Image (cartoon, rainbow, N blue to C red; front, top):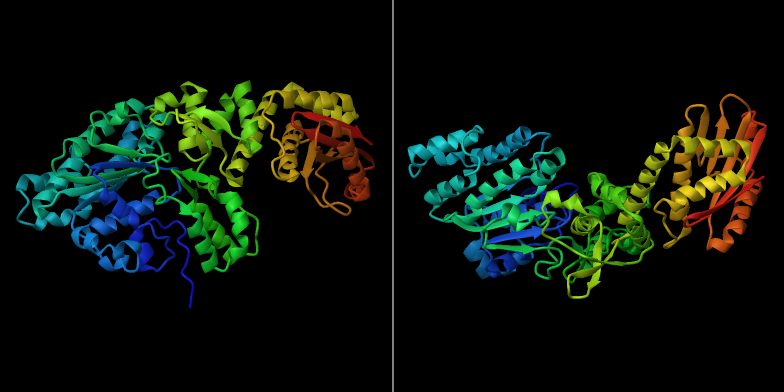
Length: 556
């Protein structure tokens, strides 16, 4: 039998079920939601953990006129009494704010209007019904064309639905905090806060036509910011045990998916790279990563794990964090990358304009957005934070490397002196410059294997030598002789060049021995052959060993 296709980028539940795509069953979220007494529920989870698909699933379940067969064979279908009472019984208003952004408030507001206009257009059929007053017809027509009172639009649509169906509505708002994030970034935060505060207050606090509302986002924005007076709001962050298994894939679900596609042998590396998040008491994987990884394994011969999560959007938060790090914070970042934990007090109810006020707030945001996870607490608000997996560890390493490169480019004089020292063979000067930069930077330590650490220093040194400009040809891992030397450099104006081989030492006392091994490797594998073939006769060979923030340079 043909295997179900993987749902790459599909967050529409109806499409997923209609096209028979692979679905990890999260429908018992509905039961837990109905069993609670929350009129308004907010779930905060990192990006790419299934928030939008779950919201689409809720819409498909509750909405009047739904295709009930979409839930055939799923866990919720066994709750026959609950399904009889609630499935297809409610008018639903569903909007997503993930696209509400812009460089100005006017631009963002226009995109906000697009969401409301689309929803008004979706229920435009109500205009043909006798139950709708002429005045309401005009208001709906205005909303359909992006005009009228945006702040009260959700409450108006609720009232319209209630008058037609005689049933209170369910409101679903996905990615509620994206407009606030973009507004803070582009400088119109206060205007956006005011708009959302009034809109949410009208729709969620003083709305007599509301049955239930569900919101999702990455951050739990301070109640004083946009949820003022909303006493019917229950917030479930990644620390709560309630709802902990409905966002993200559990270990059992990942094992089942790998088995379905005949990929069981890749379980260990899947866990190493994409597991490690703790939501409540449940260990979860990032769904986006697992699905993309399974597709790669099924469709190609490439068995190298990829950083799928980082590629879905930028990592500005890590970059801002690294740039702000003082000496104590730099040491803590080094401990995290080495696989250790650090204890921090978390604030989960920040406003966006508080995030950058101090480094402690950034720790909290890194946690809520998925760059860090917890391994326990002291019960008094202090949590042991760790980097969840290899994928996120690489994000930190790459951002530190880019930060290091920026620092090097800022120090033009120092970079030129380092390059001059390489050209002249002054190993003492090279060591001095490298040790100085390393001491002022964030380093990474050997965690599981030395290759990632060597790659880090490799990238740093490439960045340093690359500042010289067009008169130097700096190449990395090109084939030469019987292997691939780490770095080769030639000068365009003469027949001069040098070869650099890097090693990461086991400890500071092994620096010299490691540098000697690097030099020996250059000769053993005949790395100079390519340069000789290019007519370069004056060749220097450097063996360089690193350990944390120390290095040893040997020349032959």
